[in-house]
Image 1 (cartoon, rainbow, N blue to C red):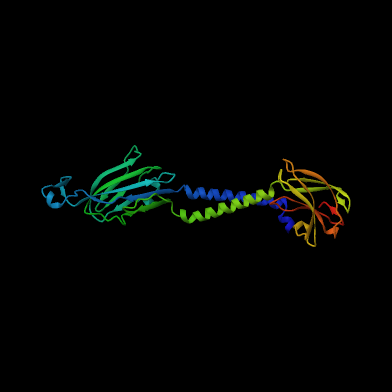
Image 2 (image 1 turned 180 degrees about the vertical axis):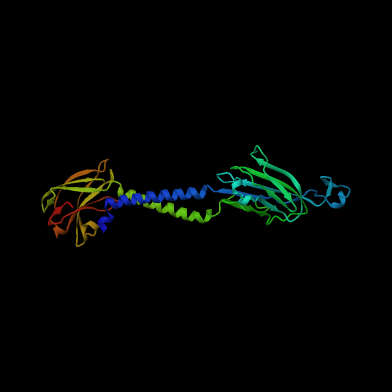
Length: 315
């Protein structure tokens, strides 16, 4: 099992899986941060009385609207802004039902209705009783609809918005607390995206580490015994970093680095391509058949060529 997990097929699979995980995380993050769904924020600014002076000082002043006297007049401003990536069109109004602003007091009239940026036609609207109806119509991407309404009395804005938009995320901002729009579910999705990116990055880094240039040793002759000269060639090591060539012995499998004793032979510095070549003489050590020649660089792991018979032999 250890050999399988350390092999290049497993390393290649790890690299592929990490790339898939990273791609999925990036896609999900983009989908979360830049959703293609329609997004509408509705902000009602604090209502203000049209006449702010004391009533007794304005006793002789009369306000008229369409020939009729009006009193206790308030101005309320509602802003609808499309912050999504696509337009909110007539098809989004379920069964043709408009967006309704129900104020709880009589609506005198519409003082202002404007689009920013402007459109070739006005946004559809009407008012009746204590409510204003907006749409069905088109609110383009990044377009803002501003509505100023005159009411007879102070309106109740807490639950003024009534909408039946389909495929559209709607956020109603309470008065005195206008905030930047955040897509619904963003904060709940963010930890998932973060964890996914971290896992993918870890897998990717691990795969690159194990799948990159892998240290390899080769022997000539392929089998040697006490007192024999062995030509050792190494490749895939860290360039220009000193490595120690040793004989590692013990009861444990030398491939696992579990040797109980080691006998340093010589230090060698791989060239700029991570290669080296050196000749060593096999020393007279106990249990020679259970020993291996190994190479170790600082901060790295043992690289072995082990013997399957008495003496040293390449795996």
